[in-house]
Length: 192
Image 1 (tube, helix red, strand yellow):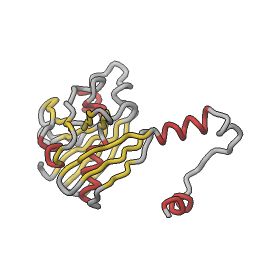
Image 2 (cartoon, rainbow, N blue to C red; image 1 turned 180 degrees about the vertical axis):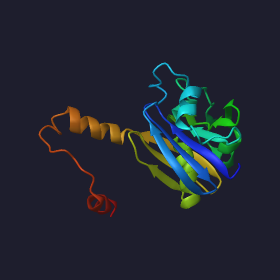
Image 3 (cartoon, one colour; image 1 turned 45 degrees about the vertical axis):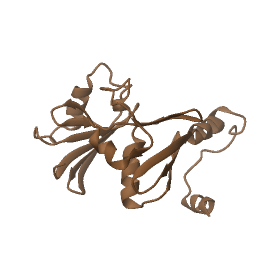
Image 4 (cartoon, rainbow, N blue to C red; image 1 turned 120 degrees about the vertical axis):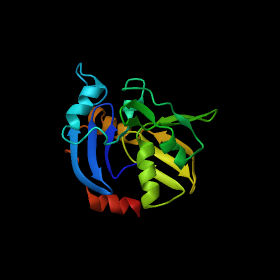
């Protein structure tokens, strides 16, 4: 990849874009034009809007997330786990001139049927920053990933964030509770 590139996390409801020169982020932008909120625009038109003044025609764009799903720009086929980390970058799906979608990952076994789109890219970054055999990826649908130095072996999805939201907003458990605010101290205590 060239030293100047655009990285995009394009989910169902939002799009986040970063312009990089080498390892330095020069600028970032956000849009509410997730793949389910294009409002009649084509994905190519939304990409052009979000990256306006960033591309010179040769600047590569690498996208991850629901943009590669059956409701996205173009289906980027899933890679079956176990899979080598390097395979993720070798199986990109082209959607235009130097514009690529990163594949998602899937597990299909009798005891586990699972998919991820977008988290695989976060996993590549986490592996680079802090190699581990287990990764926990919090979110609406939390992912627990088992890996080694070379491969992703397995992952599970847990609806932790979604259940938390449902309990607080739509159940008797959350009725009458004050608005919740993040607490770094409580988070640190929970880790210990």
